[in-house]
Length: 92
Image (cartoon, rainbow, N blue to C red):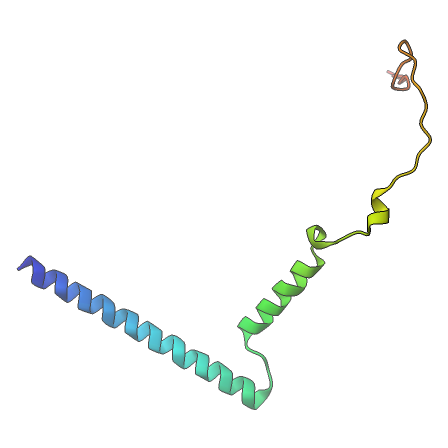
């Protein structure tokens, strides 16, 4: 009797999944037809386009030229007893 209940639940789940798949396919077709007749892109397409634009403007995607990596400075020697930081005056 337990196998019958499991088979019933399996069929119920498969039917639910089939209904959801059919609804998604109908919504996709409706979205494409609306795009065809009105010229307005579906919301999913607009979101993906804005995400792609955001990724292209992201700071980690920015590539600098090789010449920007070279920093030319004048070096100087530091004496062993010389303070490395300028003194700070605390005014209480």
